[in-house]
Each structure stands twice: as C-alpha cells, then as structure tokens.
Image (cartoon, rainbow, N blue to C red):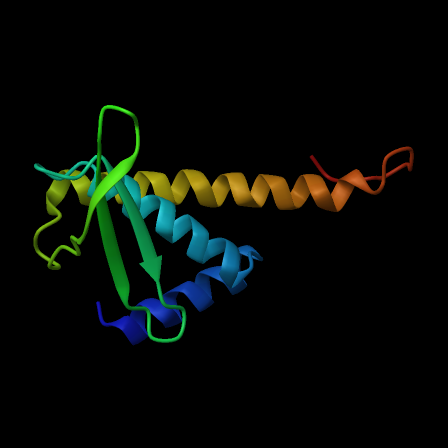
Length: 123
C-alpha cells in the first residue's frame, strides 16, 4: 500500500466512522508500536512517528538500562516485509480494538451533555 493509499484509507475510515483524523493517527501509532514489539529482536521501547502530510512512518528504538533510563537511540524502521504475519495480525487487532474504544468514547461524550434529559431511541 502506498503512502497516498494509506492517507486516503484513513480519510475514508474517519468519514465512515465519524472519528477525527488525529484520533485515527494516534490509533495507527499505537498499533504500529505494538506490532513492532512482536518482531524478533525488537527494542524494549519504541517511539513511532507518522508524518500526516506524506504518511512516512519512522520507528525510533531505545534500549533500557537497569535504572529504567532510555539509552542507545537508533532508527529501527523495518522494511515493509520485515514485520511478518504475527505483527500484521497484532496490528489489525489493536487497530480494531482502539477504533471501537474511540467510537465508544465519542458516543459517551455525545450523550454526557444530555444527562437529566429524556431521550428516545430505537434498541
């Protein structure tokens, strides 16, 4: 999938689910970080960066010393074929779960202001 295809897919998903692009980008970052950690030889800590303009993805990996401090910063951006099947499944599961959570939060916020009002709906 090219970067423009991914950008268009995120826009379509945002419009379909009623979620902001920023929230979807945050979900994407979390899912990529979780999938990265399923790789063999993955660093203990990783920061995933996504450029929203061109959808370039970077992985900055860190090792952790005995005191819990981050050391040995390095670029560990995997090639497209390096993540593997397990990471792909993990990515899909985390994306689905986080999107459901964002939708649930949005619905709660939508009705939180109506506390004390009578609202009718179809169940």
